[in-house]
Image (cartoon, rainbow, N blue to C red):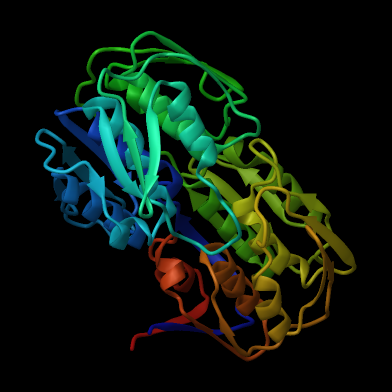
Length: 429
């Protein structure tokens, strides 16, 4: 099993290209099931989760082509995928694939909307507490689907097609909004989604679906309206930049010190996190090419944050910001309101010398003067990269085990950090 070894103490200076967003690419790939024509997606990150979803789509009968790199392109350049679901051979998504990634469950919506049936295993993915699919299934039921649970599979049927309806989510759900939009795009009549998620990835999916012929308005607000159409068509769409990757590298610079330009980054998608970084003492400046982040010797200030749906502080940046706060000159409080049990990185940060106390959904972080390298274990995707950030500033050598979690969400992480001066090495086994 691979591990990453970091020798801390080196500042980061240079340019880091921001990849396409995984959290946008996965629903976009899933949307290819809504049409028999070719959907071309540009700037898709090279990640384990993307490869897994390709396997799932192939299992359904989707033909795919991965367009090779052009001469001179680096390994950090996103790939182009061409997906064609002309002939679907199976509407079952099996346990051995779906159990490895929760987002793969989303195939239930386009399969049901286009073919009137779907049989999808209950999902897997990061072990960060309960992330039930009830809200997704309630949305499909509201659109007229019959839902049964049979031997660990969700069986959804709508032999006469889905019907437009009003969907009012009791709480904001990104997955539920993705699923509802894809299902409603081919439903008979109009659908209104109330209390919809507003994340940029929701807007990106709506933009792509509209290019395919859907009629969706209001994406990016709490109220989305969809007029169902009888069919969707092929399209070409570029995946938006990854705001979580952007925030992660911005926090890495704030932790290690230095001066880095995050190429292609979109500050508008990350305002809450960037505000917190500036309060912590980093300098953040929008540029023509992206975002410049600097911290040259300034003390790290303690900052309190509470995770919230967009445009609030993203839960996917909570672990990274906590790593930064372990070196702050005082006490910070980090409250997690989105997911249960998303503090599994705390124990591993403590192995590096961090002082963190948990009280329910609240982490109280007492900044320390120095962290010291040690062997640590990655528990999930975001926790693993928080250990990388901590390791960049720790004295001595930090060894991170189980880094397959990193490969699920960060494209060419070692190359991007090493090019900016970090001493990061992957040891393959």
